[in-house]
Length: 96
Image (cartoon, rainbow, N blue to C red; front, top):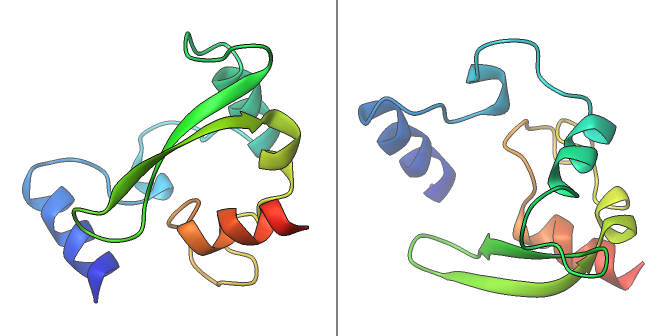
């Protein structure tokens, strides 16, 4: 499975593979969005996100509104994992 392969690689190079692996108190989704809004790539309230479909299959999604990100299912919800935002969750949120 691709996600297991990525998690294994991150562990091998000493990087966290899941949000729960990051030291300290994790930010709430609202706090995380507030931090993302301060990024230098935000233009007119819109973000540019680098997303992945699989290993070696990254792409840039431009002009993502902060409001659109609030519609993405939270980690640990319907998918039952805590890996973060996935390609399918992002695509599904855009069609809502």
